[in-house]
Length: 109
Image 1 (cartoon, rainbow, N blue to C red):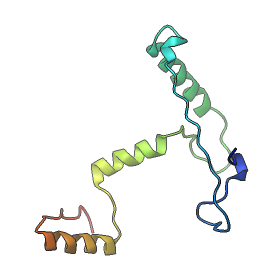
Image 2 (cartoon, helix red, strand yellow; image 1 turned 90 degrees about the vertical axis):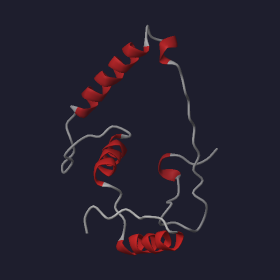
Image 3 (cartoon, rainbow, N blue to C red; image 1 turned 120 degrees about the vertical axis):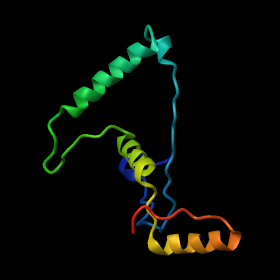
Image 4 (cartoon, rainbow, N blue to C red; image 1 turned 180 degrees about the vertical axis):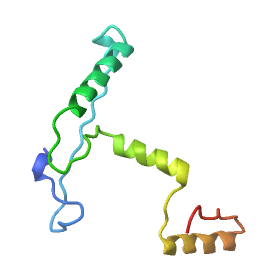
């Protein structure tokens, strides 16, 4: 019974009432409907390729699949570290000193 599509109130800009957002998660075993999980993966890979090959809107450089931005961000963070605002880094360094814990040196300033 919660709102959906454009009816969900903004998390950031609308504080007059609750968001009224709901979630539905369905999990299925694809191997119950197809010969194997590998067949399902091949079909999903094909679907992603078809979607990514569609004409893009003006100003849109790439079509991304759900989770793709997050995967890219995770890989970048694993390689380069998690960016912290200077005041957050300073606060964590002070806390580490107080606890006698070594705080990692920043990768870049």
